[in-house]
Image (tube, rainbow, N blue to C red; front, side, top):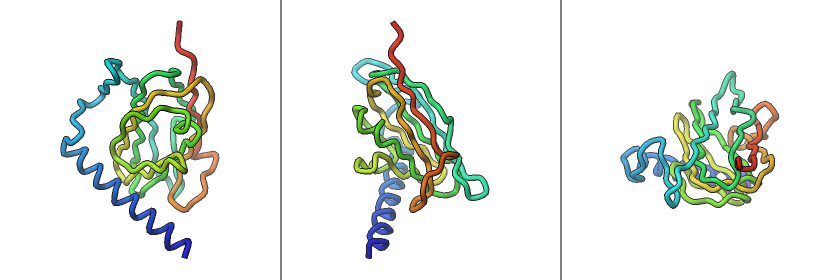
Length: 158
C-alpha cells in the first residue's frame, strides 16, 4: 500500500511539474530570460545540470559557490530523458523562498522533481554562509556520492 501511495505522489508531482512547465513556456511567468528582480536587486543566476549516462545520474558542478544572503536565481536543468529528483534539504530550509517555476516543491524532503528535458527555476535569498549538500537521483532510488555535491555559501565581499 505504501508503494502505491508513493507512486501516486510521484505521478502527481510529475503532472504538476509538466503543467507548470507548460505555463512557463507559454509566458505565464512574464520574466525576461536571465533577469530576475527581487525588490530592485538582480538575482545571481546559478545553474545545476543533471543528465544520465548508462543509467547513472550525473549532477554538476560538484561544488557551486554562492554569495550569502543575496538574491539567487537557481536553475536546475535536466538534460536526460527521465525525471530526476534534486534535493538540498538544509539549503532550502535555511533559504528564503521567493518564487519558483517549473515544479511542485516538496518542502518536507527539501527538493523537487525535474521533468525530462526541462529546467526548474527557484528564486530565493541565500542562507547564512556554510556548506549545504545536494543530491540528484532517479525517483525511488538512493543518491550516491557521484551524483551529489555542495552549495557553498560564502560571506559577501566587503
